[in-house]
Amino acid sequence: MVKSSMSRMLAGNGLFYPIIGFASFIAFLYLSFGDLWVNYSKEINLSFVERNGTQFFVDGKVFYINGWNSYWLMDHAADYNTRPRIRTMLQAGAKMGLTVCRTWAFNDAGYNALQISPGKFDEKVFRALDHVIAEARRNGIRLLLSLVNNLQAYGGKTQYVKWAWEEGVAVSSSNDSFFYDPSIRRYFKSYVKTVLTRRNIYTGIEYRDDPTIFAWELINEPRCMTDPSGDTLQDWIEEMSTFVKSIDRKHLLTVGLEGFYGPKSPKKTTANPEIWAADLGSDFVRNSILSTVDFASVHVYPDHWFHHKNFEEMLKFAAKWMLSHIEDGDKELKKPVLFTEFGLSNDNDDFEPAQRDRFLKMVLDVLYKSAKRNKSGAGSFFWQFLVEKMERFNDEYGVVPWESPSTYRLITEQSCRLAKVQGLHSTQIENVKNFCALRRN
Image (cartoon, rainbow, N blue to C red; front, side, top):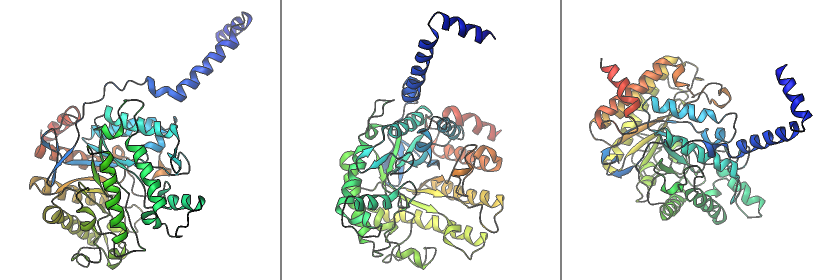
């Protein structure tokens, strides 16, 4: 009743409608530029991650990664209704002692597209990526940013081929033409240059100058099945990694491989999951040994690769798979090896929640032992972490970590174990020191 009386009073004095108009204008400004008023001055001071041989270093100290995947950060930051999820996820990661989050820096065509068409970008979505980077910096989390998808999700190489068709370019119907068509290569280079030289509207820092970004990943899970020899993909990696380095010499770079051994590899029959893995057009050692590639990446999905093995057999294979790649990092590549995706599906016929924790523990144990022995196993990234009410984005591998106490405990224990090996980095001190001390008591 008081509100109604005030409205009549304002209207009677001719003030009501101007005030409503002014309020609407303020609301528009907030929706359009609201984050410009957010205080990003409290971010933690970060240094660039460097590589020396088979190890990463920050400020002269060895740096092992306990990380995770949340591919959806930019997509959700583009919508003000879901934007708070970014802060929730990054804060939770920091509190668990995690140091790097892997996420997409691409969305080609479709809903919330960053790149609407070749060379044309949606500024609202670019500001969403700005926000993700600024929020990560504020929470002391670094980002591993992937630049395109081999899969169709979020556009990927298929969308690039479609754009070429639409512009009248005579390309093959195979989406592998992404790797060899000159027009499509130009599309991708233009995209890469635009992203790397983007100036963050919140921090004022160009992406290529921002140590919040741990590294760039050329492509998520590249395969070129039309050329199982691997020559086509190798040429593409050489060209694109050289191009990235011509723009940005400060950041590390990886390919984004799954880790399969190619047809000329002596490990094609002894380490690959099955015979098909050698015919995907990729080769772990060959693709990773280039001087323009700073570290190797591997994925671990035994339940996705096998259909006739039980859990114990898959667990045994996964451990052997990881040790094989760490051996390659030490003896062949002389570079760090990151396991940038690993997970266990809850859709498996024999799935039990305890299996996921056993799988997680195995992965983390292998990497902890590698760190203790100064081997090339430099860290891992769980696929994937979500926050509440994100069921639509769960691909049967997703976990809300604080809703699974046993999973949460394993992850935080790994943060403590790695802290014993490397010491606490400045971004971890506040969050990790206390709960690691509690675990010792």
